[in-house]
Image (cartoon, rainbow, N blue to C red; front, side, top):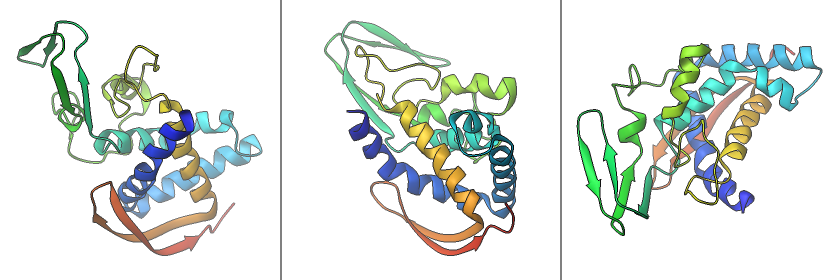
Length: 202
């Protein structure tokens, strides 16, 4: 089940990751390459311990998941009467009613995220940045919570995040930067890599 959920998400999420990384430009590529190569060298290889020390790499992955979640639409039937609140209103939902959510309404909320429509690679760095993770809802639940059998949060949430981080690590161990083209399609962007610059160091 984890593999099925992860594969379903990553088919969309990897192209989305490359799209935003490409749009961010060579300056961010250089910063990521420096962080990744330094940590891998210090740790003697790629490991979970090494991945955990790559704070910019983690922040980039969370920002991609925030700004363009692979599955932006969620739905469910209310199991009980409840009230859903926004910053300035409340909505009553009766048991059995269908609830439909469009994630970017929340993940691009300007009252939560400064420059919410912009890709900010460093957004989730530091204590204040980490506090924002509870508002990253790409997995149909807060990034700070774990899936359970009683909710609809993606059971492969942690695996998707890990694979996106590992993708960046393996990429920047091999390449310094890249250029690309993309076009929007129904399920994420259609990405074409136009050029790759092999790693000049490491």
